[in-house]
Image (cartoon, rainbow, N blue to C red; front, side, top):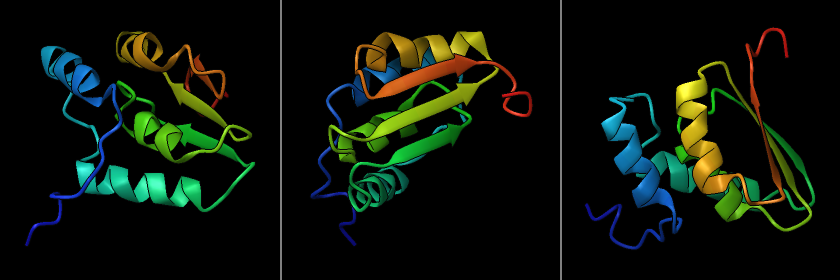
Length: 106
């Protein structure tokens, strides 16, 4: 099967993946899951999304890639080291807000 042949990856994905590997962060979504997240986000225009477990931002990159300009993403992770990667590559996007705290408290 050629599942990944026609995937259009978010522009920042390769940078986030490289930093994820450097941090030995192994809990990231794969590209097919990311593509599915993008499709789900695209199916809900002008919506609010909540992501618990930002990690380095790989899933957030896919979600943002599918979201329209009226949608918002709130992403929460308690690990400052990994969420810093997400902020570095995605934090300039006005549709996303990152919270570095325990999701149960958030």
